[in-house]
Amino acid sequence: MTLPAVRLTCAATAAGRGERPGRTGERRSDGACRSSPSGDGHCSDLPHSCLRSGEAGLDSAAVEETLSKASTNQSSGPRSTRLAALLQARFAGLFRLSLWEYNGWPMEKSRGGIHARFVVALVEAAGRAGYSAHSLYAQIGMNEETAREADHHVGLDAYLELWATVMRALRRPSFPLSYAEGFRFEVFGVAGYAALTASDGWEAARRLVRFQRLTTDVGRIELEERGNLAVFRWFRDRPLTLGHRVANEALMAECAELVRRFAGGGVCPLEVTFRHTAPSEVAGHARFFGVAPTFSAPEDTLTYPRAIFMRPMPMAHGDFLAFFTREAEHRLEKLGEPTLVARVEHAVLAALPSGAPAMRAIAAQLDMSDRQLRRELQSAGVRFRGLVERLRRRRAAQLLSETKSSVDQTAFVLGFSDVSAFSRAFKRWYAVPPTAYRANHSRPSDPG
Image (cartoon, one colour):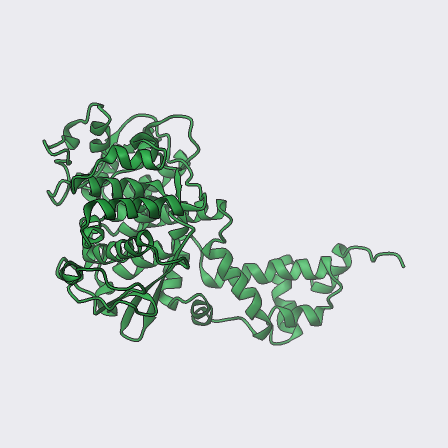
């Protein structure tokens, strides 16, 4: 039985465009969504352009397969009923399920800047503080509709100058913190949905770090496990102008707010540091972070107890996690970024001459725990042992057919303890000894 084609869209998004919102997405008088699960007026907002036709995006067959698998695993009624029940139960009030054609999400393109979703967030926060949204959009040659395009990026210089304009007009040193209040994972698009459905806070944070290039390529955030501490570290090597200083504060405040989303509103970092000098008033910073930041520090960092990241994500779901992770990896690959599987394969190939590597050793090279690497690979549908086996098999055939490597040399390069062990493995893979394979598949030597 084939599921009806579906489109997932936030009802509040439809209402904001003047479309019929339906029962689950009525707007309050303040413009917020009545259907938010927390009742605070916020809702998960899939990219607006998912409603447009003719866009390249997610494979509808993959959507159907994932949702079908999830519904089969989670419920027990008629298949279409289970699907609707699953979505309502796991994403209660967040999405409206429409039995219309699913058009997918457009590919997010990196254009040397900041994703326009963050411009929209800044303009909306400035609007709440009394600043004209129209003038801010005009400053960067955009309007609200253009800014909400899912594949649009804004140059870093223009983005930082936008921050400077707002700060000069409002004269509120704590505005970057007000901007971050209520910040949600969904602002990060498909990477945010991968984080939302992760099993725990650490896995969620790792996914946002892993997929950060989908939202910007002009800065880098790292997450380091240092004993019993977890440290977010932000890098962007530019002069610390007014716009850059407050944009850095806003980004660290975003991280703090996202941690509160899964760890609880009362969770505070142990330490906050900024490279720039202190603003004229810092009481708001201490109130927001729950600790007084250190300014003029060597790095921009947030430090937490590692233990709080073990708390489960409220919307954890293995099938959706695997789906969103695969899609984010696919988009990274389109941007020229190696996928996690490709990075693991590269590390394994480099380690093979010393013997078949343990997962723990490869995970350490990738700055991950072996448990985290196992989960990441499982999300991509890969097992570490099978990956090593496939790499050895493929590389063995390549070396014997395309190079002058001897059987002994090939066995060494692939990390086998001796030639006989390699020969047994090769015969299992290709049903012939390596010497016979080479005789039948090797390329003729160049003349002369």
